[in-house]
Amino acid sequence: MQFNKHTSIYLQIADYMYDRILCGEWPDGQRIPSIRDMAVLLEVNPNTVTRTYTMLQEEGTLENQRGIGYFTAADARDQVLSRKREAFLKSELPLFFSTIGQLGLTMDQIRKAHEHYQQEHEKS
Amino acid sequence: MQFNKHTSIYLQIADYMYDRILCGEWPDGQRIPSIRDMAVLLEVNPNTVTRTYTMLQEEGTLENQRGIGYFTAADARDQVLSRKREAFLKSELPLFFSTIGQLGLTMDQIRKAHEHYQQEHEKS
DNA sequence: GTTAGTGTACTAGTTAGATAGAACACTAAG
DNA sequence: CTTAGTGTTCTATCTAACTAGTACACTAAC
Image 1 (tube, each protein chain N blue to C red):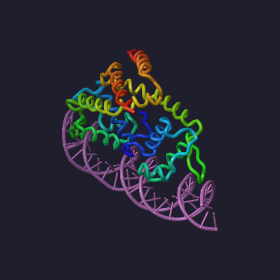
Image 2 (cartoon, rainbow over the protein chains, first blue to last red; image 1 turned 30 degrees about the vertical axis):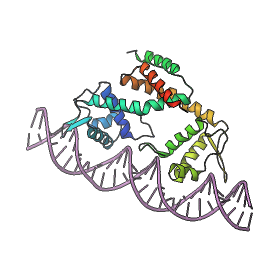
Image 3 (cartoon, chains in turn red, orange, yellow, blue; image 1 turned 90 degrees about the horizontal axis):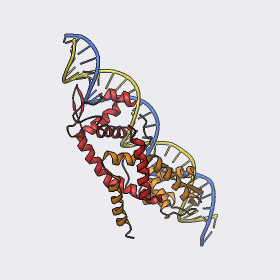
Image 4 (cartoon, chains in turn red, blue, cyan, orange; image 1 turned 60 degrees about the horizontal axis):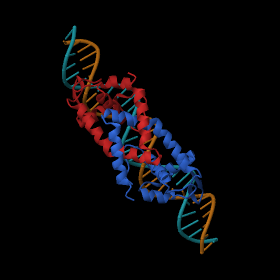
């Protein structure tokens, strides 16, 4: 996995995991890759993965059974979805509107760009 | 100034300065606050401000005269604008579209939110 | 020349983050 | 019981980032 140089790796791993949960790749209550496997997959140190898993466990998104592995919570997807929606409405969206204002872009241009984006991504 | 815990302060100061340039508060070729004044204003260490000023100077956004101070470049606003526009189109916008897809939001909802945002921000 | 305000350049110490490596405890399967 | 795979807990080392403090050189104004 390719990481952004200016943000902590353990937080970027968390975002990666939120994506896995949201897209359905990791359904609710299912076992996820072990710390060691994840470290190999992402090419980072196991301690860094442990940090992410521990954080998500404290949030309630993950649960674990010693000697067995980590599992997504029964309501993991709903949790991630509602937290991300709140962050989006309170922070990202206002920032987004501010940026398009600074750049002199109109909502109509954004809408057209979105149509192109969707055309590119419906080839499944 | 209030800083995000998970990103470097000197980069957040850079963003703050880009905003000053874009909004016209710091016109092209004009002197900007000294390192020491800026450190007091933002409540950080002068060394941290120096780091940001040096970075922006290496980018070509700032120029300086020893013993006198730092100045915005003659084309500072255009520079910042074109860099920000490129980053927006290549990175932020695709990510934005991906997020609204994950959250189940439609472009129409975004458009309505934008109208509300504009109503809130035209009270000048 | 003196002074105040600038940028510049150090040294030193602290913290967060990441890596490396090892050891131990628990669980399931054979 | 043995083994492989798991989470857990350490110590140690390294780098980036931030802070603190000091000193020096340059510029403009008096």
